[in-house]
Image (cartoon, rainbow, N blue to C red; front, side, top):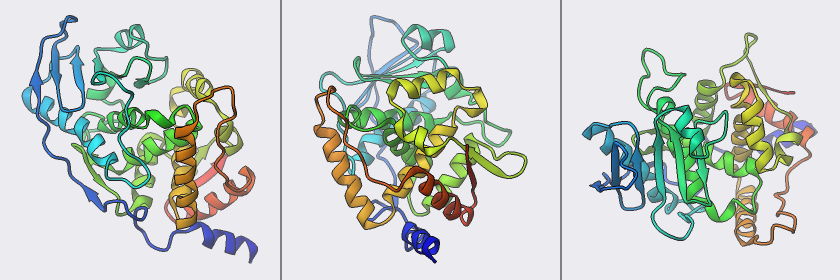
Amino acid sequence: MKHLALLLALAPAVHAGPEGWPREFRPKPAKVAIVEAPEQPAVACETAHFRLHSDTALDRDSLQRFATTLEAVPQLLDRLPLLDWQPPAGPKPLIDLCRDEDAFHDRGGPEGSAGYYDGRRRRVLIRADLFLHPPNAGRLRTAPDEDLLVHELSHLGMHRILAGARPWLTEGLAEYLAAAHTGGGRFDFRDPHRNIRDHIRKYLPPESDGRTVLPRLASVLSTDGQGWIDTNTFSPAGARYRPYAAALILTHYHLSGPDRREALQKHLAAAAAHRDRRKPRPVLASPAPEKLEELLARYWSSHGIRLVFR
């Protein structure tokens, strides 16, 4: 009975997004202005919030869709109760679509990543080869990996909390938005369980026995920024998404239920106010990692994901 009570406390009352969030979101078409750039990329343009450089040529329709997806993220974040669009101060951030792996690394992108938010330089680096031709695309899915774009732009928009929040939370929030993205800057928050299940399956297919393997939560919760980058760099390609999936599952937990959402809102405010890196970061209260693993495994088993933590 004790475990049942804990499980019921975890479960939201209905299959719906967090209270106060839009059920669906459709962006306004972006206005794109072609500009000249000293670097002379194949494409150089500006939108309301961004500068865009691309080593790879984009046709008019692709550029318009890309720009509209870019502009959707600040529009969306300004409508969410827990978040808002808070990029670093200064000129418009640069979205740099790098031709290939070498160009991505030459500009500062880390090994093992397809995208990277560089807060110090107010820019997002995206590997065009993986963005335009995602490796997990099949015969029926050949469109660009816009979820990657949404994820990195979410980091840009959450810039003010990055120093004060643990990576699992900022990565989890970015993945929560990416999971709700249905394409072209459109979002659907009506069924988070389906969004999360399908998103995790896309990037982390179940093992042969049907289980989805995630890292132990004690490790995920304690990993710092450099540790997160190192995990991406040194993990096998098939395992790199595991900490992101764990972060997504954890973030859904903290978004479920009014008490946890209130605690999360206070935590994000504390993270935004955290300026002294010599002081410990604010801590978001949650059950002990081992107990949380048990609760989450039981909960998600009824929502299409058989979780195992190891």
